[in-house]
Amino acid sequence: MEKRQRMCLACREMFDKKQLLRIVKNKDGEIFIDKTGKANGRGAYICTQKSCIDKVKKQKLLNKAFKYQIDQNIYDMLEEEICKMTN
Image (cartoon, rainbow, N blue to C red; front, side, top):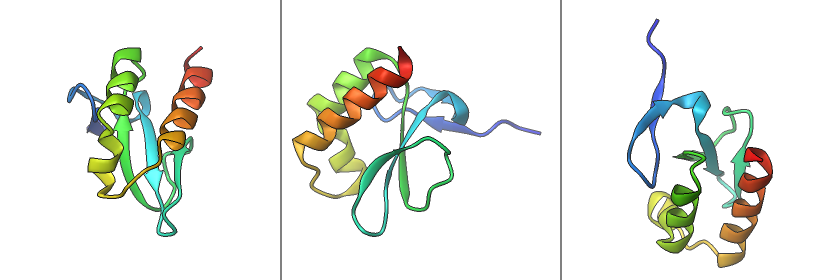
C-alpha cells in the first residue's frame, strides 16, 4: 500500500503525512493543530523544521492556504505549540 504524502506549506517538499503537523481551520473558523490528523475542516501541513515554521509565520502562509485572515496571535500560539511538540 502506498504511503500518503503531503506537501509542506513552506518548503514545498513531500513528506509522509505522519511526519508533518496538520493545521486545521474548521467550519467555525477556529484554527488549531490537529494532533490526531483526522479533525474535520480544511488542513494545511507544515514540516517541523524551524525555518519552515518561521517562513509560515513571516509570510502568513496560513492566510493564503485557508483564504482567511488569521490574527498574528494565532501564529504565535501555533509556533509555541509546535516548539513544545518538537522539543
